[in-house]
Each structure stands twice: as structure tokens, then as C-alpha cells.
Length: 266
Image: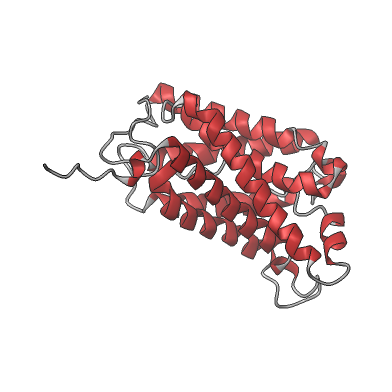
């Protein structure tokens, strides 16, 4: 009797992929929001030790590189409902798996934010209330935008930035690939986009990340969450549709380790 051939990680069953997506989104929210709410202004806004906006953007870029490398071979490393939907539109992800992926991402992201709330509650007496009163790094427009950007400005920024982000993903994980490892390019792209969008909307590009913080920050922030669901998804759909039409997102089973190799081909 011969041994069965080993199953490669990218062929993991759906439950394993959902665990990977949840874990990766947990890591993303935990690191990004933790950096934004504590390390960016440590010990206070007048300090010389905090990492600032550049540090927050770099944190997201690095954590995406790490998450994509660690969990990408299992689930594709989406960690973002907009990315999952964009890849499905491009023919790079099974539509049947979209809803399970989205649920896993929202659960993982919200759990990451919940742990940060727990940490704040275990800190100084005023830490938790101060964190939540400050918006908990949530996304918003008008008075809840860091720079006072209007709904239209935020909508355009989130749509365009997410379209760019998903286009980059489709390009560097496609059949032609990239000379630089895909997780590095994707992480660097997010870093640049965050540096551009933090003053506008506090930079979402990810409905799960936005929900995770808004649900704890309170009703004022949660009431604006729809913007960071609709427009990142719109941008991802546009990118996915262009990728499918132009075959930007075409991939082969042999050369793509960042999306499922058995996904429908464009």
C-alpha cells in the first residue's frame, strides 16, 4: 500500500481556510488599531516616542506582509471583505465561499478589537473611556473625519483607493506575477494608501476593520459604518470587473500561492 500524496496547504478544506481568514483579520485589526490608539501617541500627544501616522501605516503594511505569508497559503490571505468580493468578481474566488469568508473576517476583526478594549479596561482607570471617546481609530466623515472631509470626499477616496489596492493584488498574484514577493508589494501598497487616506477618513479600505472599531466606539461611529461597507466594496467590484474583462487577474494553478488554486479562472 502506497502512502497518499501530501495535501498542499493551499488546498485546505473550507473550515481551515475560514480559521486562517479569521486569524489573519484578527491580527490585522489587533496590530493596526493597537498602534493607532496607543503606540501612535505614547505616552501622550506631545511625546517624542510615539510612532505617529507613519508608524501606523507601516504597522499595517508589515502586518499584512506577515499575515499573507503565514495564512495566505491556507486561505489566500484576504483578511478583507472587499478583497474577497473583488477577487470573486474577477473570477479568482468561488462565489460559494464568499459569505463564509466574510463571516470569518468580521468575527476575526471584531475579536481583535475586543481584545484591545479588554487591554484598555485593564489599564489605568481612564484608559478605556479615553480610548472609546477618541473614536477607537474608527472611520468617519464630516466631524468624524480627521481632516473634516465630506461624505463625497470620503466616498471617492475609499472607492478609488480600494480599487487601486485590489488591482495591485490581482496583478501581483496573477500568472505573470511580480519580481518582488506578492506580500511585500501588497503590504507596501497599503502603507502608501494609509498615508494618503488617514487624514481623509482614517483609512478603511476594509469593511471588517471599520465595523470592528465602530461597534465599540458607539452609535455615532456605527451610524457611519455603511460608508465603509459600500464604497470599499464598490471600488473592489470595479477593480475585479476590469481585471476580469482585461484578464489582469488571470492566474494558473501552478504559480499562485496567494489565492486558492482551484478558484474559477477569469
